[in-house]
Amino acid sequence: MNGPRTADNPAARGCGAPGDPVRPHLHLHLEPEERKRRELGLAPRDFSSRDRFFAAHRTDRADRPRTSPGDLGRYLAQVHAEQRAQGADLVELRLSPRRLLLDGMTWEDFTSTAQRVLGPLRDPVVSAVLLVNRNSPADFVGELTDRIGELPPVFVGLDVAGDELAHPDVRPFVPLARAAADAGLGRTVHAGEFGPPEHVWRALDLLGADRIGHGLSCAASAALLRRMATDGILAEVSLTSNLALGAVPAPASHPLPAILAAGVPVSLNTDVPLHTGHTLTDELDLATQVLDLSPGEIRALQTRAAAARFPRRPSGPANPSAGSTPRTPTSPHTSGWLGPV
Image (tube, rainbow, N blue to C red; front, side):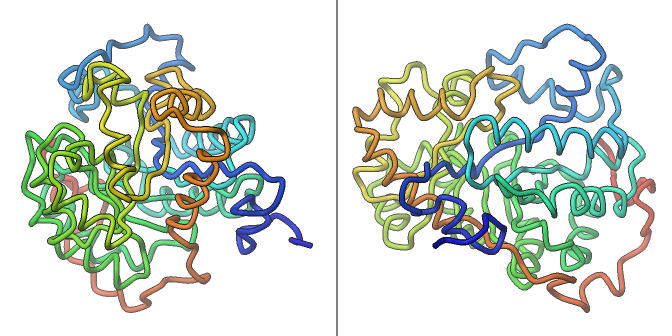
């Protein structure tokens, strides 16, 4: 018997358990502003291109609705219900603290709400990945570096994300990535979605990425494909998001077949489902068409992807000394931490 479906029993969650669907969802964003806009009845926004997408996610927009701690807790519960309805077995959810802190939330509000809501959830287990945007000010990145060891165990990874063309240099995030590794967190980096293979190389060599978000351009470099295949670096692919934002013009031109043919492990994800209107089932159906794979072959792909998930850490800070001497200022409402938007 596999036993109860719990966070500590991955086999019982469907990761290879006979008869269970294997549906890991490793690259999913909370989209708090979109959820808030829908609650307020605001008009939908145009995300038909990369430029429109990143412009709509600027934190200095005057029309941006604010998210409260209560909103955050409610949205986390919504994601769990959505993923359960879609049959996901395990979920890793990107959470961006900076925009929430700018909304007036405290760091303690952010971390404790995530742990309180996500920690007990099952069917599926939903873990959090701390997202840090590439345009974050240096003081903010430094403060996170000091505090990342304080994250509660529901946080399993770090993601460096954002506009890689406008902010290609990841060197400012090297200390943060090292601190994340010291704290037992996995590391993933949005790279190669719109940028060249060099961006993926930097994510691997400078930040020690365990996984790559999107990574489309790795297909243009045989050496990079060999590196990712040899080291088992998983590409977190989202066909629907790549199409919606113009990273690829059509399903037939997506590099996913070449990435898989090179032996690189791949997960299939919705990325920003509220923006695209697609579910995990839609993503898997589209992948079946693009790859011309049988359901059994898709299952094998997903089983391998599930093995690349970031594991939950023991209760309590992974690095008790981290955060004990935070740099000043320590208030999340101080401009020195958040910096210019």
